[in-house]
Image (cartoon, rainbow, N blue to C red; front, side, top):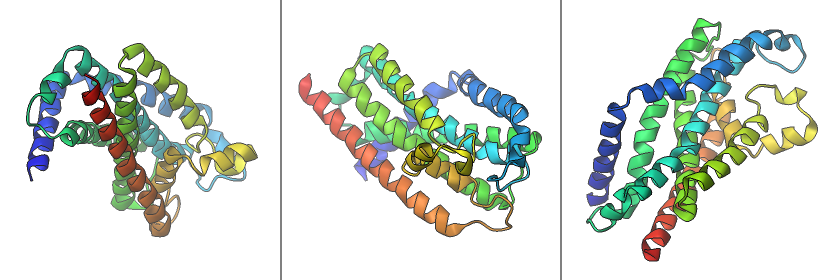
Length: 258
């Protein structure tokens, strides 16, 4: 119970900080919106090729952009941790009775809530440019849930790396090295059937691709492919648990080093 209270307190702190900079959501959505509008217009006729299971590229692309946005939100979370390190915020928490795991999970909860808002905005924009969700509200819900899990996975890993390298330049370099390759080694923009064989095989083990597949689990059907949703979702949950554990361990290692 104490750990839960501490987690909610930390999440509340981050949410209060977030409320003082509401422009953050708009700024963080610039790149995904550009991708959605630009790639949606540029490749709208690509769905005429064999391999796509939808008649609209906006319908195909929107879940991918939502997942990509979640990936980037989580990936850059380490920069926040480094900023707190530089300002001595984390060191002050370490001499308080706050649960160590709460320092990580509280930040992940706040980031997850932001991801929900970002995802709904992108889904709404996708609908405006022609995207359709045949699975209805259920498809939107599982897509947003997958986006939150993806944010938790890469947010926790980013926090762990930040606690190890402890320099903003280093965490930025690591994030930039990973995020774009993960994006293009997935089906965010292109149907798996049209990918080179080796990329298609790599994408099978890419958590970003799992989230995208969940979001596309009802492309033209009236109901979701629950088997796919549950198997991919279970994989994301497992990775989120492992990543959070690693971040907590990294926090312990940081504490012992000071």
